[in-house]
Length: 384
Image 1 (cartoon, one colour):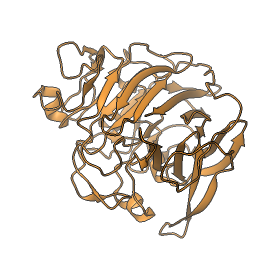
Image 2: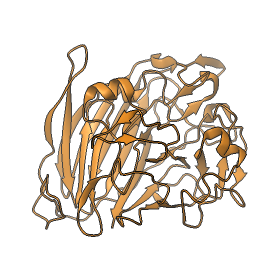
Image 3: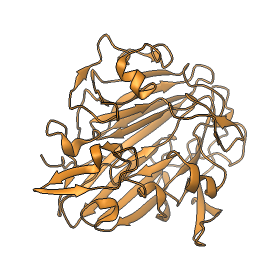
Image 4: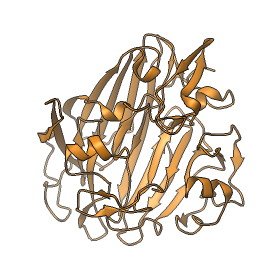
């Protein structure tokens, strides 16, 4: 099966820019858009300079690094207009290089896991970088999250944003083909954060790009997200083996802790004792979205924090959503606010194709060939 080629219809906001003053503690009236601001964020060991861009529009504030396209902070107002950073991250580049469990990063070439780090394409078997037991995770030991991206800021109509570029050479981490990746972060007048992924290749390959933001809508480092309320529009999920590789089954969520079709708190069933939860230490699975692959983003999940009132709605054209409940956070990492991250102190909602798709003919294909364009969009809408 070949990768579904699709044209994504932009859902950008109407004309005019709404912005709030950086550093303010409460939501303010719209003032006018401005180009993203760049500042130094330290250096790598080889002297490469790392920069951080600050963007703001429609009441959403975003800070992004050229290291791995990392979303370092994302600030939102609560129901009273008070701002808080709602994503996990570090305050220095050294921790991102040495310690980060993909905090806020762009993931590629292949988001999620590929079993035994192998796949066969057009009769040839490729051996990938193995970095998760015997499996390959998030592109291998030097995935897209561990590279410096070229960044171009923009102001276009009512939108502000960044265009990030990275070229992955033929054979990098074992993947065939030179892949030219472009990812656009856009903040709209309505405060939406839109991610547009784009890639081309000169040789048949597989690709599955995503973003690995860790969310805590009550505020980064504020404690557990088990009281967050979650809805996922999916009647099936992909069970995994002990290495968290899909078995190939598309199992029903009915009668299981994996049923989020009706809103419930994350903590309600997280310790239900289901065999899939026990081996994953919580939720760390791909949900098979009811809508499948679509020509434009459709709403697939809602997350709400009852304490602050903050909400996150996600729309995508992708067929899957990886919900990870922060199972492997262990109190050893200190975040931007100076607080440690413990198990369950944040969660991830990664729009994607399915894990290990190259090894399952019944999964949607992730094959990209020369002349084709990989193009997908995810929209994050915020409220309080």
